[in-house]
Image 1 (cartoon, rainbow, N blue to C red):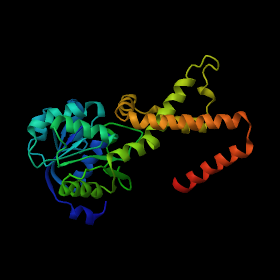
Image 2 (spheres, rainbow, N blue to C red):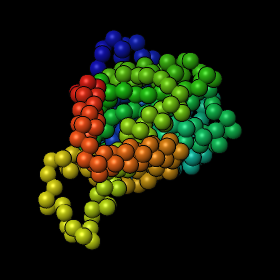
Image 3 (cartoon, rainbow, N blue to C red):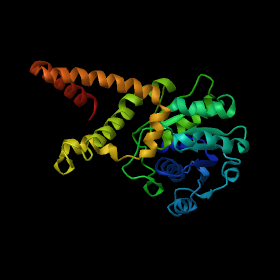
Length: 295
């Protein structure tokens, strides 16, 4: 982490993490190790997980009581599944101090903003939507890593009405954890990640499901090699999380599923026609694009 960034980040008295898993836990641990808050407080329903978070140095203290967790908190990080975002907001609303900054780590920003608006009647000026683009194969508080966000992007999607000081505070915290912070509209965010993240996950799930105990082929998995394993690795991702993402970002995901259907139809035609020149041009163009942009 950049020492100058840490020194320039205002010290917070209390930060509350709602959902102390991989992302929330890594955010909490990073804040603690950088000395960015006097107290990093965890909230959840599984007390054994919260005890483990204290033992691992991820949080300083915890509670399963929402009032105790968010009372007098300067900043609340929501790191919970999209499907429970609204209920969590409803639970904490009565106990927030007026100046409290709220941010989140959800991967479908329009959905989160809609939940906030539904609960508060408007989008509070101190709400700064965010999405850290980082992760691990492992999940849970045991996998929490203070360096998880180093050199990774964090996307913020504030509105024109979002308080500039709240944006600055959240930006500084992420930068102090080593992240590269960018801003864009929630709609653009959801469109980009529907195409680059949500679509590939759904394709991987669908391919494995299609071939699982196939009527014609039987069990094909003993015969898979590197290509299949690389392509379908993300089909081992959490099913509940991807159910939620599919529902909460459905409009953008359907748009890109249909675009991919069109591309598959065109590819099928090229293969049926055995159009060697067109196939090579497609494959070469894709290879060059990936080699250029993804290292």
